[in-house]
Image 1 (cartoon, rainbow, N blue to C red):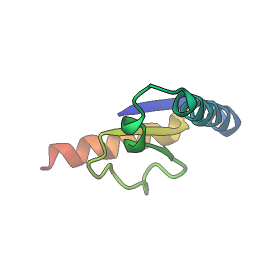
Image 2: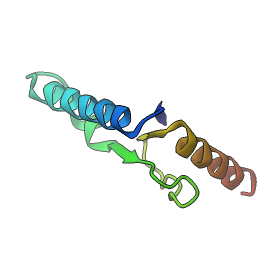
Image 3: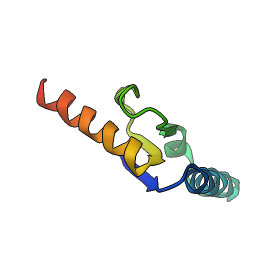
Length: 83
């Protein structure tokens, strides 16, 4: 699990756009294993309190403002604690 945080939504969108571009570039290089990229999921956190927790993905990227991702982390911590 990876968290990308910033203060503004524009900065988050720029980071996610760059990450998606890098994934495409990596896929275009012959002889590199790319199967693991199929499991990478990028999720924009816009409403931290309402964002669904991860569902078993092996590689998930949460991107959002510090405020929104903070709420997501708190909810995830509570979910794991109550199991």
